[in-house]
Image (cartoon, rainbow, N blue to C red; front, side, top):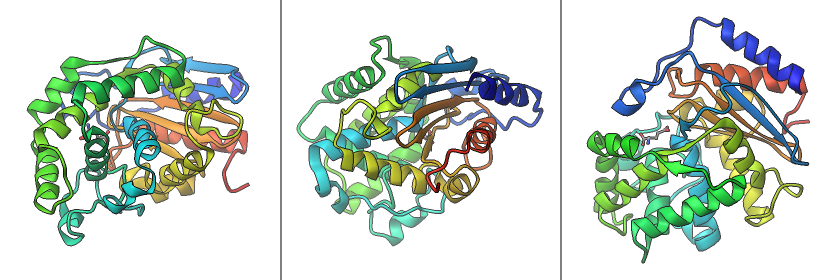
Length: 300
Ligand code: GLU
């Protein structure tokens, strides 16, 4: 595994086309695009890392995996009356489909869907309580208490959050929002601003490995979340990722990818430059190389 990671890292270092760092959240625009890190944690706990795997980055939409786990645990199938389970085929922050589909977002991993999930777990709770519960969950999953929210990133996104607020207001108008849009969006911006290293994220992903990983949620929810990661985890690049990599993954605009090899391993990859779909350019290439070199795929 170490040899595989070294080769992937060498390949990443040699690339000149690294994509563009997300700039619509100004605090993320100053991240150095030359970074690349990757960690693999096996089902038995052995771990392997390469490159900038110990550098903290903004997990952004990777947080949607953790909030979905909390929401499914709390609400079960009730959640699906408010959000669908189909790939959207549209950009992560698109508002187009939402009007056609009467305020019910396609899936929990596009922004509108993730806002509904956060809105659902807020019911009857204060943002501080929900964020506390989320951090407890992520820290327990990673076995590491040194995981925090970067307040400057949350503030930066709040100040430039018009687009997410508009999604929330539209869903409120359609009767699919329970809390004030500012409150749910504020909570969502803070969840996205959680920072982790590849080492921490790969460890935190172990609860999704399956029977052999730590059991923080039910096995049926492990399978469901993995299915959604495979079909919807990379926005309008989800089909491409499934085709090229063949493993469930969730990306974020901070350049992180959490990828699960069912029954075998949890993998975190980070490189801040993004491709046209807002997924890590080098991260996606590394995921593809990793699947090729290990021969691991959910398709046998
Ligand atoms: N906080 C980001 C947003 O809502 C998350 C998007 C992402 O990581 O894809 O725009």
